[in-house]
Image (cartoon, helix red, strand yellow):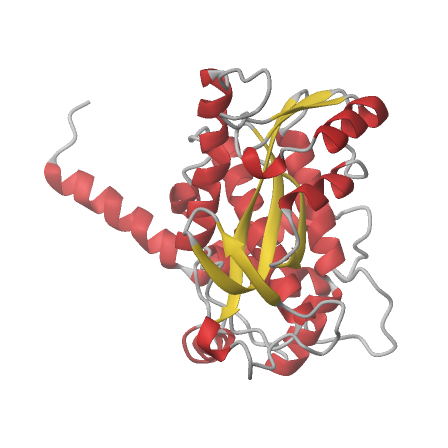
Length: 320
C-alpha cells in the first residue's frame, strides 16, 4: 500500500501529539501502576487506609509523578500550573502541590516495588549484569561550602568526590546502578560522592543477585570483594586489569561492548530524565525524585517491549 507524503506527515503529527498529551500519557502510567500493584491497591486505588478519604488516590499520585519524569518536566510548579490551566477538566480533584510532594515521597517504596516487578518480567533468565556509578551534583563546587541543600542529617549529607569520566571534582552524590546487559534496572543506591565504587559491592551481595557474571570497570578492582562475591553469592566479577597488574590480560572485547549499554543508560538519564538537574532541598526529596526517574525509565522500556519497539528507544515509548 502506497503512503503519500501528506499521510506520512499526518501520522507523524498524531504521534507527536500523543507524546505531548499529558492526559493520554497519564492514563498509560495509571494502567501500569494499577496492574503492577493490584495486590496492594484497594478498590479506591489506595495502598493505605486513610481516616479521611483523599481527593486523589495513591495510584494517581504515583502515575502523575511517573508521567512528569517521563515527559522531562523538571519543575513541579510548572507541572502543577499546567495541570490546573490546561487540564483542569481531566484532573478536577487535584490536591495542593505541597501535599502531593509529601505523598509521593511516602509512596516511593511502592513505586520501587512496581519498577522491580516490571524489571523482573523483562530480565527473567538473565545471568550477565552490569554495574557502574554516575555523579549527581547538588550545586557548583564554588558554592559547596555555604550550600545547605540535603544537609538535614550528617549521615546523608553530600560531600566532594571525583568523576573519572569528567576528570573533575563535584559536590553531591553518586548514583550506583546494577542493570542487565539490555539496560533494565535491577538495583540502585545513592551514596555521598566520596564513597568509593568498591563499597557498593557490599550492597550487591544483598541485592538478590546470585550465580551470575557482573561486568564492571577499573573502579571496582578489588581481589577481596571479588573473592567474597564469588564465595557467598556465586557472582563472578569481571573488571579490566590495570596495565601494571601481575598476570595482566586484556579485557574480552565482548565484555567491553556489553558495558556500553549502562553508559548509554546514564546518558539517557542525564538527557531525557534530567538526572543532574536538581531542585530538591532535602535528601529524601532527592532520593524520591531519583527513584521516580529510574522507575519512569523502566515503565517506558516496558511500554516499548509491549508495543514491539526496541526496548531502549525510550523517547519513542509515549508515541503509541
